[in-house]
Amino acid sequence: MSRGTTGEARNDAPRGGAGEARSDAARSDAARSDAARSGASRSGADDATSRYGVAIGWRREISGFVADLPGLRFTEVVAESLPGRAGDLPAQLAALCDRGVAVVPHGVRLSLGGAEPVDPARVKHLADCAVRLSSPLVSEHIAFVRAGGTEAGHLLPVPRSASAVEAIVDNVRRTQAELPVPIALEPIATLLDWPDDELDEADFLTEILDRTGALLLLDVANIYANARNRGGDPLDLLDRLPLERVAYVHVAGGAEHSGLYHDTHTDAVPADVLDLVTALCERRVPPALMLERDGDYPAAQTLRNELDAIADAAGLPRITA
Amino acid sequence: MIGRDELARRQAALVAALVAGAPTPAGFDETRVRASASALLRKRAGEVAAVWPVLSSSYSPQWNSVFTAWAAGRPPLGALRDGWDFARSAVGGTGVVGAAAEEVAEREVRWRYDGRTAPRRRRLPAARRVPGGLLVQAFGRLFRIDRHP
Image 1: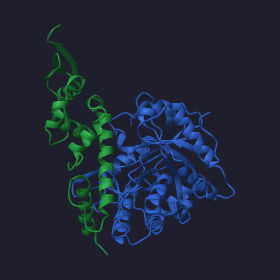
Image 2: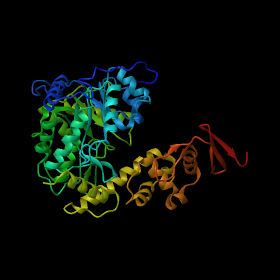
Image 3: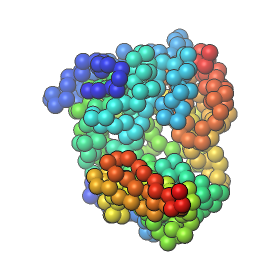
Image 4: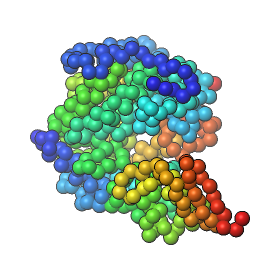
């Protein structure tokens, strides 16, 4: 397991290990105790501290900026952007690990919501990333990205139906069986709704989390986008989600286009989304609150200002100084 | 309740409508499907631009509209192949001059791409014409031979 020139890789001893038979209940219990260790189950009202605090996603284009953030204790990297075991981790990312920054591999192409069983090679890559980065957890999406042999090139919503729940629970369990750490699932922003939605979003998510023991990657920008495009109140959903299962939170920017709000990750975070950050932290402070920026990178000072705005909205310490 | 096979079929129909020019499946909002398809193309144009920066900026400021017009109805194959297929197409081909032509030529001499399967690193030397000369790849190194040294 190489990490370029930075010497031996560290990794936490895998919990249980791949291939060991584990009952669903044992897996759920283990995931919950891990959640407790990571601070996800602390009661919110009395405890305004966040284990990792404000953070930003790691991208090659801003790797220098990320490395220079004095208060950074957490980041996330797209798993598919990392090489397989034979390749070296980007040096800047390995340096963050060595510094003790928690690095979470975020899968975007496993297609856990697809009707087809998840590809074992993709699961293995995600697990390998977690080991190489000494990650406390991994994350992926409640979505599918391919069907009928065709790639969509983006995360697509699954119907909120019983059969989709079965499919995703099945794929999450297949994935968990190979992971040494817990998985957090992220519900996505979507412009589309399926005609055969049976469950509302809160019930759908809660059922998936209950049956898999997985954690929740709460993306407040996605909640905002969906509520805005459906004409609803984002707080309605926020109040029905199991916030004690939140492993970490995403914040991102977007823009309006032809009357619809698009969660682009390439625009500034709107004030309404910052308000939602405040509302969330009033209910329960998450273990980490991470800005996602995927392109069109602004000047460093602009990014710093945005991180400060997120920290201020959350009532958390700024990480830029 | 729809079973797993039916779910697979319906997911395939939605993907085909979004990226392969197939009709919107029954029950979906047509406006939202079209909006999603456009958003997917915009995102794809940005991803291709990141992998083919000289090619894409040579079309600036029309890159988005030129690429999305070509890509609409063609399922994505990843940014490397999408940009490559675009550059080799009639639409892309006429626009690929100057520095953009060099960017394409450099990929052509380093990688073998048949247009149907993933590009593979060339093991043997290869050469391509570039504006003002010839670009040669041998043993992983590039050499440029100018016509008028």
